[in-house]
Length: 131
Image (cartoon, rainbow, N blue to C red; front, side, top):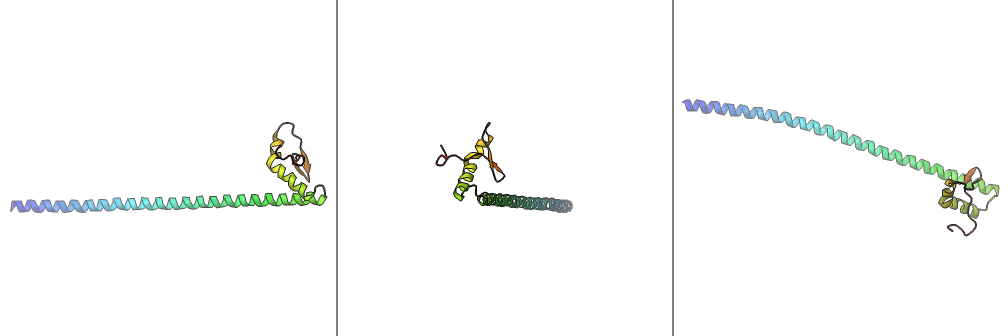
């Protein structure tokens, strides 16, 4: 009988211990689930912010490009309308300015002239683009 009472008490204690362990693990897993949910939400929010920043940067660059092209077209029209240069000379001038002339403007003592309000270095003589 004494052995039966000891076995009963030990079993009851083991069952109680298992129930408490199960409750403790339920709390641990609930906490882990909450932490994972917050981490997921933070990651999603951050990715949306990065995507928005990339989109804004692209839209800004597109606007800058559109304004630059519009300004260049306006300058080309103004220069051609004044009759100072032929269309071929205008293209040659701006081609030179874009690829070579910009370097010359920064050099000390460079010769600078303006066309239609633009200031740029002078184009080379015909046929001397890279010489």
